[in-house]
Image 1 (cartoon, rainbow, N blue to C red):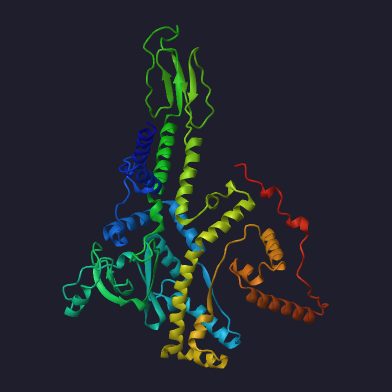
Image 2: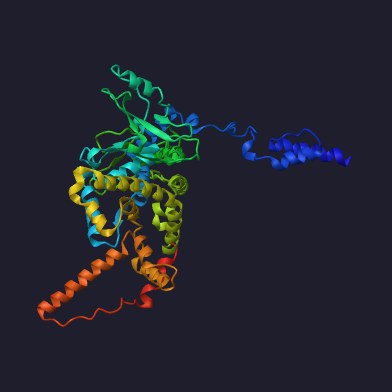
Length: 526
């Protein structure tokens, strides 16, 4: 009797897990052990996908356009999305150039060139955007639309390429036979690719005269386009997908919840006060009572059946002479409720996860100083790969710019080759020496953080160069600038006949001033 009962129990467990209950007891046990809850359809939620597909089959052109339009509108209209995007860009797309070869003349030339090339008239073909603003908008297009491009043009100019303009488009009537033949090779994602997925060319479109359809304009070789996007698959993906797609519905629900609560609060405010009285008049017995009072221009409100008159003045102190049994109560709005506020915080926290933000970035009152530092460290760890993506994009740009500075006759007067020969370096070595340094994170408590860096450097678990880079600074430039300041001070003292000041070791801070276990480290009661 025990065996049949045990088999029935195993079969019931198998059906609960959504796996086969057929076969021997050993087979049923194996099915139960190997069953994945996320891979079985139990009819209690949206069924799982039954077949892996190429991302282009899932994120079709039609769906991608709808996603792009929705996220772009949220970025325009919803403050929380706009803040998320700006904050993301601040960390992942803020860099400054650093070139150090050991040769003063070459270092000055390269750094001077990139300062010059960063101006709008030298960088942007439309002479509208400088380098830093261009790369910010480039990253914004990536995070909002999934991917973006920059087209390399003659004269070391760049032109932005928005995501939706990379598409097959409609051929113009006057297109040549060769253009039509090559256009046939463009896939639905707007690319010509090799069998292994390597990009050969981009189909670049314009929005047409009526701005209602994409018209094919040209093919750009992949080597002439600085292209990047956000990928969710290792190989089965041609185009990027915005990380904000995971938060679209959540953000929309948060926004609508805010709107509905504001409407509710306004509606309750319109009623202002409630006037009560005896339903039957002076004797307090019987009668119809409950008469309605309409809003009128005259501020005098009469209580029918009681003989009372309420003269309410909006710009004066109101004293109401009421009969027994009458009263005036204010209608208070308890919107938003504390439950709604707490729930909204939770939903906002989930939405922020789309870009790896902790909730303390949104509301710093919810954390202590040390908690804020811990959240920042976790975010930097989670976002470093996004920063690296933008570093690679910048490196592509600087390699191309240095190649033009080296080879183009238009830029021969800069004398890069001559300076490189003096430093015994070739073009590739110069390209490798140029670095893009992230601008780093802002100070949360400068004194405490500097003290922590100082101790770490002294214990040899950190160094001054990396500590400076974390704040977007260059230790070597800091030394050069400080020496210039000190030399200027000594020269001025000498000129004015003042005694020379001995420049000693860096100041050591009193331990009481850098105590990190003070009141600021306690969690906020808010």
